[in-house]
Length: 203
Image (cartoon, rainbow, N blue to C red; front, side, top):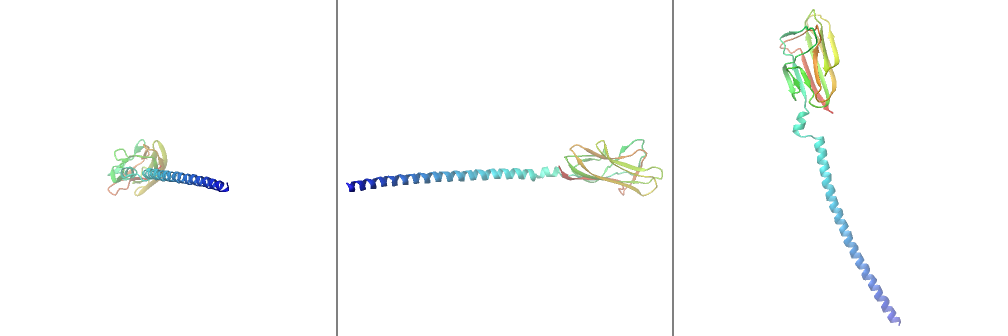
């Protein structure tokens, strides 16, 4: 009787052992399946990171064509052979003689700069006068807004006025120099009268 009980206990232990092994095998298969899923997710995640990096790269490092549009710089002389003014009203000072023009944003026919993109720009003008009778007075304009005014009383040869400003412009904004009424400038081949500007950085 005792032998039968012992054999019965041994059989039951064997069955439990086999079940435990089966569960262990199943557990290993489940573990392997989970690991393969993790590896696949890692691959997908790596692909996503690559696409995000490429998107950020295209946003931060524009291509050649885009970067060329961001390069803006000009410098023109008046091209006058003699005097301009005095006039009965303010007139835009012509600057026809190209020194430098990167971006083609300045129109030498009108004397007006047109911002090709939103950004911060710097402008400077230099004007020369040589009259004993007429003042040398000019203004820098942004669209229809007067930004600054410079004036010198008439005193003959070798008088200059210089003006400059840093401006935040939207695309399409205009910047130009106006000669005030009853004022006169003078220029020759020495390029005494100039207007220059360039893009500091886009916004």
